Amino acid sequence: MPLTIPAMKGRFGDTDYYVFTMKAAGLVRSVTIPRDMPGWKNLSVTEIYQREINIRRVRDSIAPYFLQDPSRFIGSFIITAISENEGEKPFSFERLSDALGLAGFNKLHAAYKEPAEAFGFLTLADSTRLVPLDGQHRLQGIKYAINGQDDTGRAIRGATNGEGIAEDITTLIMVEYEPKKARRIFTKVNMYAKKPTTGQTIITDDDNYVAEFSRIIADNIGGRLVKIQGNTLRDSDGEFTTLSTIFNCNLIILNEIYPGTKIKGDEQIDSGKKVQYLDKLEEIWEVLLENIQIFQDGLSDKEESGDANRSQIRKGNLLGKPVGQEIMIRAFMRLVDAPTNMSWSEACHRLNQLPWSITNSNIEARWQGVVWQGNEKRGRIITKNRTIAGRLIAYWAGERLSSDQIAELERDYRVFFVDQEDRTLPAPVA
Image 1 (cartoon, one colour):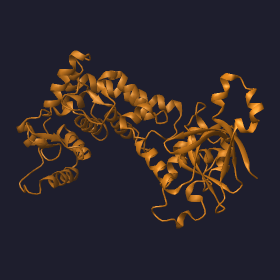
Image 2: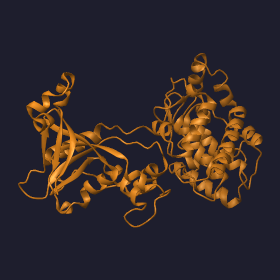
Image 3: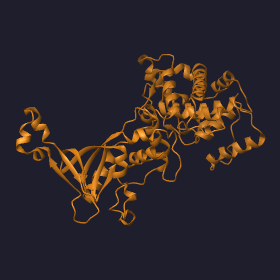
Image 4: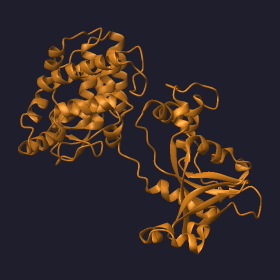
């Protein structure tokens, strides 16, 4: 049976489009995800414009958001209309002025007549399929939320309000189907929807409790001292660290303290555990910021007048750089964990004794090839060796290792010096 709904017609470029609303339950019934369309798998590469759905993301993040957040909201779906019957027009649109007739239309208030020209009635043929050009992950998320389970029957976390979601009103923007135009619209919409940086994601993510904690730690350090845009700091930047570095360090700290469960931040935990986790993070960060000498120096003046000092520290010391901060915290957690079990203050004291300054002698003795590439004038920090760098720093600062563990660490260290057969693992300094 044909479906008639109120709609507004617009035009952008050479594309006519129609805007209308639909209850979420109707959306799920009426809009077909491309992969579920008959013949989709037989289309050529150039005919297929949609990417595969990330089912795990839909099941674990999008659907739970719809179910658990009373302030849930989503943007418009961009869809196209395709008729299953060859040669049949998938829809028709009658303007309100035509539906009312001249006499009826003239009864409208004069101020309403011009705006009303955009409104009318959209009638979808019985054979019409609506297909998303943008929003298929959100569509699948609404479907899972209403049903309370995914396509395999696996329950969605927090699935208790599917009926309420079914009554929510969604907005759709529909264009007539033209294969080449459909591909262009899909490509351009997704191309210009710029992927946020890691820091931007952390600043906006309310569903990941480690992201939430990272924002709190950033505020404790000083909001202007934490760079949100990008994952690195230039030598000239006045910030102390980056939000993504704080996030990475928080994951390291929590997973070292609570090793029983792989903590990522998007898993469900009770409020008591959240308080416990945050208290521990704030306690450790306070100790590090107050007891690591370079951290003290970098934060001695948190105002704009201290930016030049932070910039100078970054140029000459590994702990002025986000990667250096992360690998130091990796080492700190190894020192305070079993079997070494150093006190937090002692671990900071040992770490302060390491030669963090970026000098040719320190580079050659400790950092070359593992943490630093080049010399003090022309060099850069190496970002990919964070795990072994943390192990090395912990060892140099006095981590308790067995003879077998030391031999293993030396083997891993010497991998970086295949052309230097006489290279040996530097001894601890503390």
